[in-house]
Length: 360
Length: 263
Image (cartoon, rainbow over all chains, first blue to last red):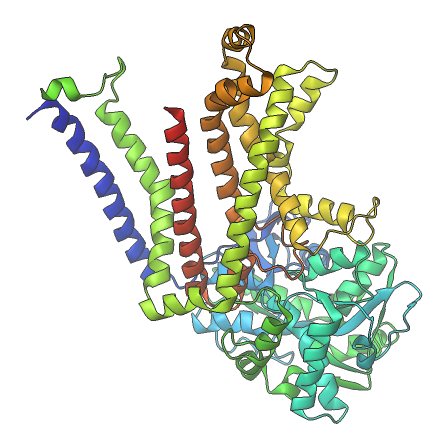
């Protein structure tokens, strides 16, 4: 052997073996895990009052109700059921959070902005299939889709038809990048049906809205709000709870509840894998109690408990033609018909509007 | 005969341990994730991979992203060299302060960069410049976040450059232009290209600073994000794989260009 080849050979072997090892490990790992998505959530550990909690519950939730959960977990720790229970909370985009838990992020309580994010976990047996077998059907609180407008409503926006007037600049998050933003578009679609339009006419309305009036579709609801508050747009489609929070934060905005709108129902559940079933269930039941539901209402969310809702009718007036996702056929059908990456009718409208959509 | 052809060996020989460790490190940190993406992209079927990367949405996103990244690399190479030149060769008050500022785009969370650009060039722009939601703002954002690459790779080379050669050329009657073209630029070019290559690679994958401001501009990273949010992780991996391969080709070409002029 010459010196040259002595030098040469181990190097080739090393590189080759590295590549082979990498491919093999990747192939093994690739088949067992079904999701490429990682967790994008910000985490915060809050020991919620108790100085040395004996139990720490992992709460993984979508981002907007963070303040409500801070208040709920703090108040829960003061109760007898919540004595010694601390919380480690993680908040982020609903879809990312759901995928993170699906890929193994520890969670005792999960809360999402849409039911499909919960269904994903039910499919993989991380959440029991009877998660919604309770009087509240698994929903922690409600909201509705509203129009956020500039202070004083200078463009006099009050109906869905006002949104498609020439010159009205509308902002709504991209439903391809934000599953939570699908509520907004479905509200516009359903509102047309409620006004007696046919499904084809309702879809034509969505096409006009998304291609002519919606000038930009940020990736998430919080980015849409940030865009709106920097001065872009006349109307922002958003959750009522977000609109209330923006008003409280001092942004120069107000909101209009349209006559026809969609009831946003956000699911909550205890995971089947939780090693603190008793405490986690106690927390769920407590946030459904009068005290818990009152906190939800104070933070801008519509209570699911009717007796509490009665006390907040002036804050949360019920629109005359309120409808739920069931009116549109339920989430499974809605996802397939409207948002399928290849064949969904709203996906096609979005492609025509030229915004980023899924490529599959 | 064989011995004569071997390259001169350095006095410090890379031992087997060093080689093994670096191989292991590169495998775990770099090769493994990249291989996982490749596997994910092609596990379903070659047909679905092909469909994911050849539909109009993907092609448009790939073209826009690669063109924007190349422009970023080219503009960044010119302006970065200029900034490095001024910082090394010119004396002016506040030079050290400006020098310290150069790295800040790396430290700033990219989403904050996006928000700042939106405030500066959005509808409420204090200068009346309305670039937000256009392709121009994509370029501005990419130039901002990649600024340090070329500056920081050119600066040390410029500092090491032997000024006596320039003085000799000048005394022989060479004009400033000739000195720059024939003496300074060849010495700097490998560093400029290496900085530009880094800027290109960084721009291809950028998402944070862009999400707020792109409007309807189809950026590959955002399309990939949409794939994941739409439960199509295979499509996301496919598009990523194409981006990685195309970037690799571009990077190799840039390096070869650097190698050629370096000799």
